[in-house]
Amino acid sequence: MGFSMHHPLHKFLRGIYSMRPIIFRYSLWLSIITILILPLAACGNTPTEVYADLGEEFSLSIGQSATIKGQALRITFEDVIEDSRCPSDVTCIWAGRVSCIIKLVDGSSQYRMVLTELGLTDQYTSETYREYQLAFHVRPYPEAGQSIRKDEYRLQLIVNK
Image (cartoon, rainbow, N blue to C red; front, side):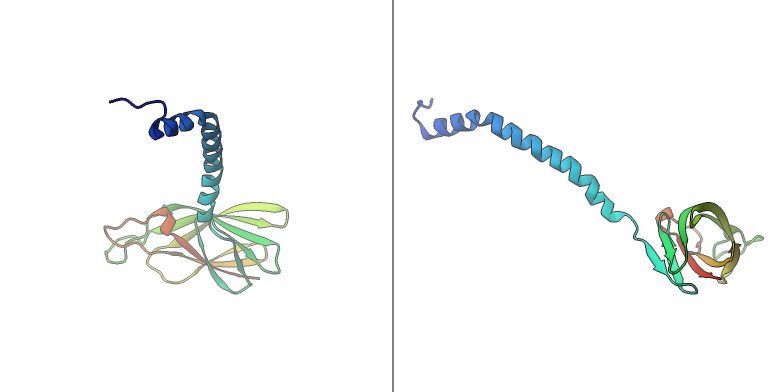
């Protein structure tokens, strides 16, 4: 059973076929726009900048930065390079430690520093950078049988002069 040249379905299909260059052009633009927009949508997951006063506690995730208000100081939590802390629900012969890398930008100078905190403590550890005192604590604390993903780490900081 064939269609005649004047059948409505045949006319419809012939009309679609004749629109090939237009459809191709629009699908090409749609593809280009999709390729450009998708990476921008992924940017929505980037950490936001934190602004804190001297003496104010703040928290950073890996890759996140904080600017200290009224100071030319910016701190970026770059990575956790070691976490050998004894889990809270285990008896260990050594408390272990956690070490983080931070980047400090002070005016035009840049410095990387390793912050190391001993395990089995809830107390803040302190380091000095120029005239600044950095009190810090790394969370979460390990538990037996559970690993900590990089995106779960938080560096709690208090900056004073």
